[in-house]
Image (cartoon, rainbow, N blue to C red; front, side):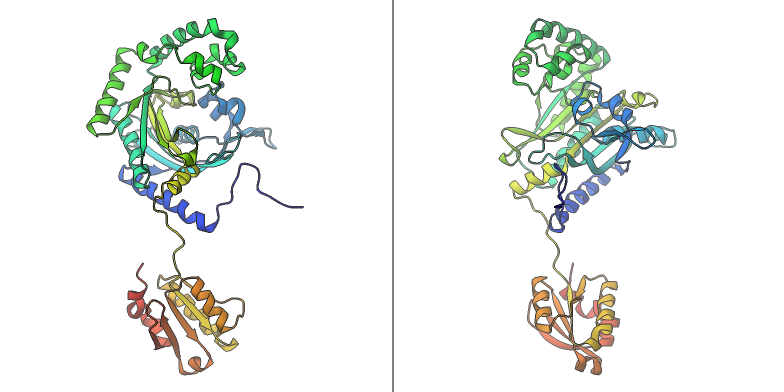
Length: 430
């Protein structure tokens, strides 16, 4: 039997993992500057965590979740997105308590799972980096989160970015707009897709997000939510726009944008890139928004929240296409060539000593001849090659070659053990 990875998954090999670590470490350093702190939640949660938060009319719940009953007949779901699990942890661990400084700022990284058609940069197992901030309704926090997302993408070398924003208003806004949207769509009921027919009276905003071409034509002339904003919602959105202008962050308003999850309200946003590596037209790289009400939905006190998420696979494709700087596996500092069985013990001791001094070091493990060992050192781009044969062992010395210059010298073993960083650190600067 030939074993293969499941459809929609990928192996991240060592050469690629270096780039992944770079993206994650860059994000973590930036988040730390904004005082966001890491949280790690389970890869699977109770089904209700996502069905209650994402909404029972969303594609994620109705079509894409990997859910099953475990041996205890508990309904379990592999997490399809990061926010709901973080909110559940926020509530369960009482991070809303007075001992926690508000807003509580958190970030996460890790795999997510959605059963959908695999495509470039979008797999069934995909990886997200996301942030969540709880405890403040301030438009300043909205703009801080948006700015942080833009800052991260630019820091990773992405250019030609476009920020698109909208508002879904407060509860009163959505109620009024819901009625207007249903009134507009009902005369076209027979023309709607089957999914949109189901959603029309449950959550008509989902129709605006339909991928069906006929639905898209119908909603092109639908009422705008911006015409139904309460004074409070309009003021919040106006402040967000003014603050973006203060920070000189260009943006466009798209009144038809609703995002794919039901928990959003007030400010929502998408950061897009136009690059053929991701497909035709503008493709979303980072997206998020405000979700006042989600904490209460999952059993907590009334607590506003806002956040964003971005997919690492899609980001990596974009970075490669735009030739953004990506690290590769670091060259080897030292390769130790041992010649003869009698040198094996001492060779291992040398290797471990140099490693303990903070330098990457390797040796032969296949009993190869000296010529093959030297070839391996060359393939690994070793900066220094140390050679130890029986004669050197008897004299308690090693031969050392600096590969960049070709300089060779004989060094006492005791100097390797006692003074290696001082003697050769200049050739091995990190």
